[in-house]
Image (cartoon, rainbow, N blue to C red; front, top):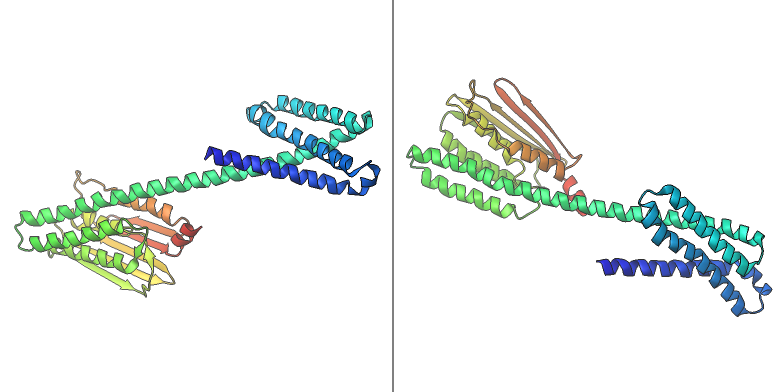
Length: 338
């Protein structure tokens, strides 16, 4: 990487030198007849280009990194003016051999050096911005991977709790539920390797999970799951919606022996998903009931995957818990392709 950057810098400066030499030659072409020969004309232009680029190189590779970047602004100003004055004095003696030409050359070098500094800082700022974007993208990928990995144990822990509860009741449905759980885990493991899955598959996964929970909760919880709209070939980040469903069951129906309800609706319109989860809350909540990390996790994933393309409202009342989520499902792919 260092060798590639050094080679790019060398080629860039060689190109800049050639460009300055060509521009200087073209600007003096009208005065070509004042020179003794074509050789002396080309030598004069080449020498002038060397003075211009020499001052620029001293500024770029010595003064800026070793003086200006260390915030020695006054010293930088003195050294820069001194360098330009020295070059103008030597050049003035070589080309014009009088103080008037030295004075004229000083202001010309001052102008070209300022132009070179502007180009230098524009290029450096562009490189810094590119590096920052790459760092942010890398950090985003690392964080998303971490958050996605958190989903697996969280979901497995909640599902195993359901199977464990049924096994203690010696329910004859336990073997079937173990097989159903294995299918759910297979989908989760496969989807965790992807950036996006079909929305239809994700909703089928949620439906199967709800069927499993319905069997465990027996008759003390009424669950309604409705889907409206054309799913088409829409895609969504995997395991993004299930935490809202898990939260409704874990902190609603599971935490009480009272009769409870869970209403879940999904509406699709113009590639926009609207999810509403509304569940009853028990009149008494056990002090030992742990607050899961599922919602915090999914909020962070939403911010990373769908920035400025989602909205979420959570309304917690005494006996109800309501979540309303909207996602523009086209936004994730715009971000990935940019």
